[in-house]
Length: 209
Image (cartoon, rainbow, N blue to C red; front, side, top):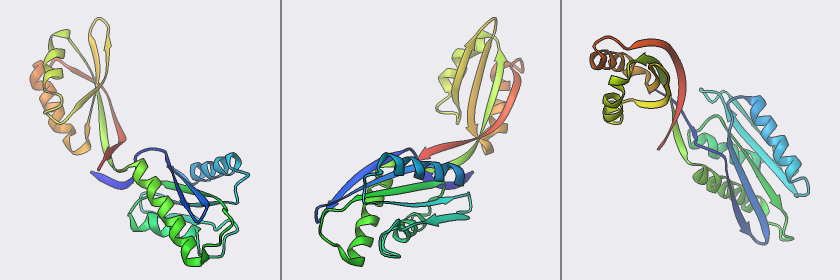
C-alpha cells in the first residue's frame, strides 16, 4: 500500500543566474525536528551565504508545512519553494536553497523563479519515490530450502534481505504488506510446513518512480 510520495535520498543542485549562485539542498525528513536540524546544519555550513532559504513539508498527510524567506523580500523565496513541494505532492521533504548574491538584482518575479528552479533541480537529483508499507518476515529453516527460496525470490513478490548461517538458516524476507499472507503460504509450501516464522515486523520502504 502506497502511503505517500517523497524524495529518495539527499541531493543538491546548483543554478547560476545573473551572477547569483543558488545551491539547493534537498533531504528526506521524517519529523519536523529532523527537518529543523537539517536547516540548522545547512545554515551553519553556509553561514557566509547571503541567504539560506528553508522550506519543508512533513507528515503522511502533508500536515506540517513551514517556510522562511530568510531576509529576501516577502513571498519571493520560501513560499515558492514550499508551493513547489506541495504541487509535486511530496511530503517528508526539507529543502534549503543557499544564495550567494552576485551583485545584480533579480526582481521579485526573478527571485521566485530562481529559487523554484534550483529547488526543482535538487528534487530531480534526489529522485521521487513512493513510500509503501511493507513487512519483514524472519524464518528459521533447514539448509535444504534456501536455494529454492533464492531461486524464486525476485519473481514471487519478496526479497531476501538477510541470511544468517548457523545450525539452521535464519533468513529475513521482505514484501509488501498486502502480499504477506501469500508469502507465508508460499514459504510453508516450499518447506512442507517446517519453516518457523520467528519474527514479523511492519516497516516502510522506498521505491523509486
